[in-house]
Image (tube, rainbow, N blue to C red; front, top):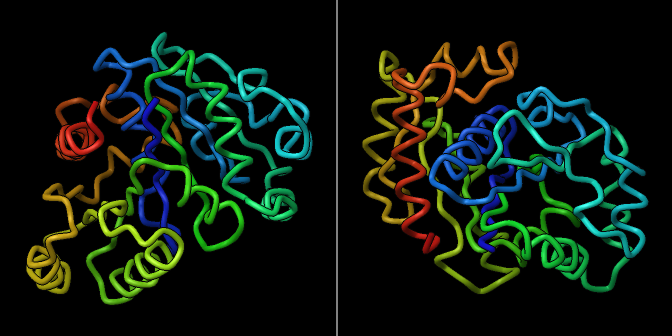
Length: 247
């Protein structure tokens, strides 16, 4: 099973929309897919029209020997299942950090799911903590949406430094430009600068009303509005990601 984490320091950059749409595209590519919502806001859970209820709560999931499969919920997509989130995940950092090796907790849970799934997509909360550390040492690829603005790039550089310190790997992080609005001169200038950075994927996902409707329609953008520019961006992103992850 390949583990793809959508993560980073900065919030409001399209992480959940990316995770939801990549999970849908992985399923449509014939991969048995698990979307694990690790954010206590439960946005990815909501976008698949599921209740924000983690069976037994985060304490039972991270603190015991529970199988991840026991927390899985099915969706309207027969190829995609979800581990839902709820507010109990607000304490996940404390629970994961209680282990001397935080990565071991996530790795154990994901290993148990690897018999049933081909791809796991992790929707991670913004910031750095024990869960972020565990994700870094567990995932096969770290997808980082980056706003085409100075603070967005600065946040990415901070995250990339963190990953390098934790893993020593220089090919684990896969940043891409997210929520670009080419009507803005700043976005156009930043995009031109970013394209000179070989760490970035080629895909650029535009700011789109189709993505903004995701939380209302509770259907992945690539399903609800497949001809939108955003859906095309996510398909291009999936093509790059699947190739890089060896799927």
